[in-house]
Length: 155
Image 1 (cartoon, helix red, strand yellow):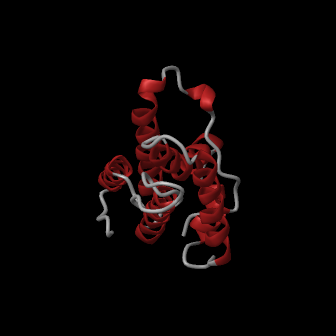
Image 2 (cartoon, rainbow, N blue to C red; image 1 turned 135 degrees about the vertical axis):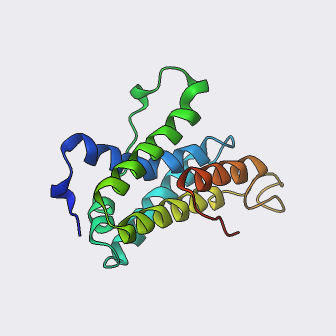
Image 3 (cartoon, rainbow, N blue to C red; image 1 turned 90 degrees about the vertical axis):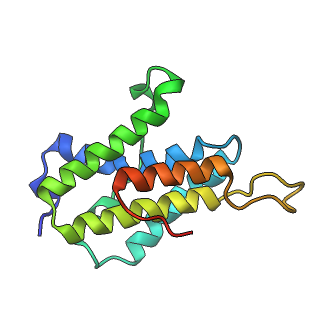
């Protein structure tokens, strides 16, 4: 079973960037709600820390502070694709160095985090009444993430 020590600093940084990149991808899918969505990423990490034990590697990942460096992105139009590239690179590194269980736990964490972000704020409606829990554009982002991870997406 691999640990943080099995990754060099650049690899570890890339692995850490995957989950917040997925969360940001969903947050960018719909205008507004950024604060709630950012808080939902933090809560996903906190909850994962509480449930530690299923994957030692995932425990090490969620022990770190989630972050994405905005300076990495040159053009706003390129950001969604760049975020998905970060996620792809993170999974490729894990698949090369981690166990199947570690990779599966990571992918599940990423999907759960993305769903939390999508559900953080109702879209549409008036004064919180009505609206959709997950907008069509957020659902499309969730499906893009699931496709990138090669996993199913349950609603």
